[in-house]
Amino acid sequence: MKLAVEFPSVSYREGPAAVVRMAQAIERIGYDHIDIFDHVIMGIPIDGRPKGPYNPAMPILEALMTLSYLAAVTSRVTLGTEVLVLPQRQVALVAKQVSTLDTLSGGRVRLGVGVGWQESEYEALGEDFRTRGARMDEAIPWRRFPHPGRAHGRGHPAPAVLLE
Image (cartoon, rainbow, N blue to C red):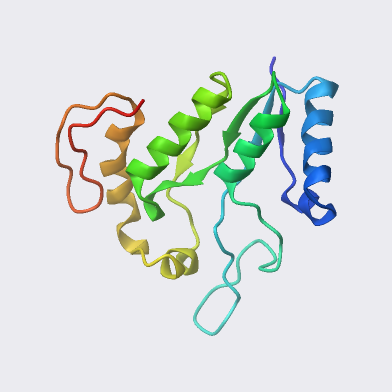
């Protein structure tokens, strides 16, 4: 059995050193994996927008940046997202970021992706919430590298590229 822990975004309130202490304690205790969830923003409840399950003032560290920081201060635990909201991002950039993180962490990255649930987050990022499923389907070919050139719909063309 492998044990995972969801990294608490609130640890940053006590400063970067607290984030380091928390990550190293998780590893020292014997957990196998650290996950961090992903939200770029949390929408504030307004007329016409349903209240979300989280407090919109809840501190949330950006997932990939936080995992990079954790990779630098840990050596054994694997690191991942639960889940990265992929359709609201540039897929080629995410592929490069995750590939780089995996390389620099010694192959310790596990990427979980999903379409998300928060329409206001898509609005804030200039993305269409209603087409997120189709954009996710278009993004799937980016999961492996190198990728042969194929164009996939409007959202995420997959040119003939090699990401190292």
